[in-house]
Structures are given as C-alpha cells and as structure tokens.
Image (cartoon, rainbow, N blue to C red; front, side, top):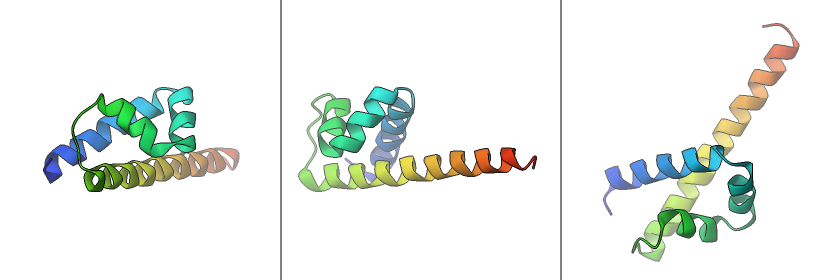
Amino acid sequence: MDLSNITKTVQEIVEKLQGSKDALAAFKKDPVGKVKELLGGADVSSETLNKIVEAVKAKVNVDEVSGIVGKIKGLFGK
C-alpha cells in the first residue's frame, strides 16, 4: 500500500468513525482491532496497519480538539 492509498484509507476510516459514536468508542477501546474491521480484511502488513492506526488517532484527536475549541469560542460569543 503506497502513501496516497494510506492517506485515502485514513480519511475514509476517520469519516466512518466520526459518523458513529459506537464505532469511535470501539476505536478508542481497541484501535488496531477496529481499523482491521474497517479495512474489511484487506491484506496489509503490521507496519502499515500501525501507521494507519497512528494517523487515524492523530486525525481524530485534532478533530476533537477543534470541536472543543469551537464550543469554547461559542461560549464567549466569538
């Protein structure tokens, strides 16, 4: 799996996780297991799988922080 495919895969997984609170909770509990499930049995090496998991974690955390900052700004009317 090349870098462009990994980037696309990460984005697809993040979208699926953000679309379902249950999926996001399952990811937070068992990130590797949930990513394997979302990949639908795709044949990827452990190294690639770990890179995908780390990228998804980073993206999900950034999106959560952005949402929190937005809510805080909303509290102050800005």
